[in-house]
Length: 300
Ligand code: PLP
Image (cartoon, rainbow, N blue to C red; front, side, top):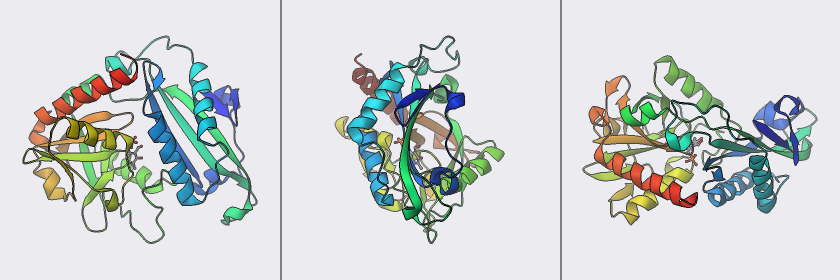
């Protein structure tokens, strides 16, 4: 792991931030997680654009603009030595790969919620080994649990912004893991499933791909957008529409998308077999298209 703190590479143990930092105190920060293929960042432009959007929604003036963020991210990546002992359980394309977390906080200041108390924004990059599901999870699928988090609670942070205020998602994952599930699927105010705690959700219904619309109160996943694009290119019918728990339970196939997970099949829901209880043909096809796209992007 290598940390870039405000433009300086520092050993992880020396990478510290003030207890008065508002990211720590209030989750008053925005972030992105970028992954590599063959040690090259994937979909970096889309992540930088979303970071700027997230900051804009919070009125947070980031310490680095997009070109600087790109430079700092690449410099951090270049400083990470090749992995000595790659995880043998990881999928081959994930072995030796990195996750690059970029965090922009509003900075430290006197205690108090008023953002005007912040003195100076801070920026950092953490480059660490990618933690992706093991190859076995892509072959067998994972379990999900539907959790009653209400994204649209009064005063809730805009789910379209990727902020440090993630407590609802943390608690949802806690609940899911307690029941042995890999991921929590979050319920919106209307009783529809919106997204995972750190992923987007797709179902195959009557042969067509369905995923909740951005207006459902979800993060505009970079992987989600790519999957919709791949489906369009392949002539696979796809639409953005609400999904109720019963729609998921009755779907022919289910999968999650996220930067680290890519396309991860879901084969059980709330402890019962779902998505046919196996990895279905549409998921397999999209997975192959995704792999080809990632490979091409990495110069393969
Ligand atoms: N939804 C939430 C709440 C997330 O935190 C994430 C990513 O961590 C995603 C969806 C997936 O987004 P992406 O595909 O850009 O990683």
